[in-house]
Length: 331
Image (cartoon, rainbow, N blue to C red):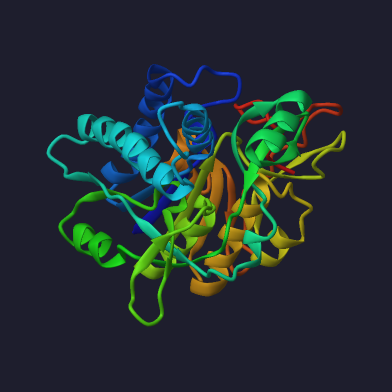
């Protein structure tokens, strides 16, 4: 099978952790084991990743750097995160897949310059802010902030992806048996001049799950895996009786009341891929990518209802549903 596997940026740098390289290397080490299992099982694999914490950190550093006359734009910072996370993933996968070619490809993603997201920033990047810090950033740097759980974070435009610029290169690499890391952080966001064809970077961050779904569709992938820090999508989120959702149709998934800043884009990406291709999508734990593919863990999304095994029991009353990053990322 040809598989696109998307891993979250928060899974590589969890909330409250120091954003040191060693911390991220530790998480990448664990993620690579899970991803390598897909390859050794005989599948063609393209890996993409989030970059919310990483690009937020770089943006904050750039804003505060006295050597700069202006901070680096988000598209350039996005390319930096692709290089950083891509090389960490590639080196770990090379070690686990000796003799197998692994390539991290800096990838651009086209967006519509008139996308309404540019008027309504909604993509969380960076770390947690106190009310005082958020107010200062809004006043001094013109940031937009929004509440993410109990804290505030910076939000930036997240336009819908329309095309993967380097798609032919990804296809060519896959044809040689290469494991490809592409469209990291949703890809570097660009617009294309309709007359000259020239691409230009824009101040935005593309949602990595929606970009992964587009990449999977354009590659003719059989499956899209969205790997995160929880075991399932949960029904009745925020109540005393949350329950893991084992299988779902796209319609069922879209009907759930999901948090916009975390699980909603994952659900929309999975549902959209299944609707457009008839393929398989799964939302499941990063540490068991093969299990998510096989349906032994995670939420499997198919165009038609499927017969599932015994349903996991609902969690005990009063149990909060948290991801490893400490945030409520599911229903």
